[in-house]
Amino acid sequence: MASNKAFVDYVVEQADLGDSLTYKKMFGEYALYHGGKVVALVCDNSLFVKPSSASQELAQSLPQGPPYPGAKDFPIADGLLD
Image 1 (spheres, helix red, strand yellow):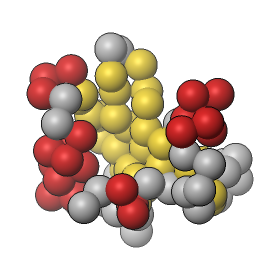
Image 2: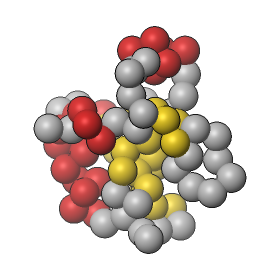
Image 3: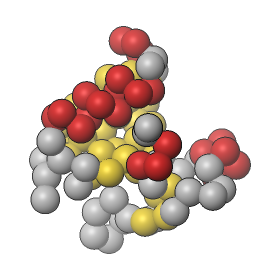
Image 4: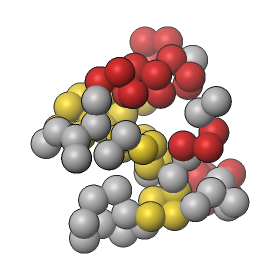
């Protein structure tokens, strides 16, 4: 199931990073960019934070799961949006 733009707009609004957080639609899903680098994916209307040493340290308690079939697990940050 593809993500909808309204959910992506909500994620960007919640992040409150202004114009420094952008997104691009890719294959029915979205990639979020900060400083020109992919920092997260929105797949099936869920927010998947790109795995990195920083995200692993800051998000140890977040559930993990693949954003799409065959992908490695990403921290799922849906619970942080409200």
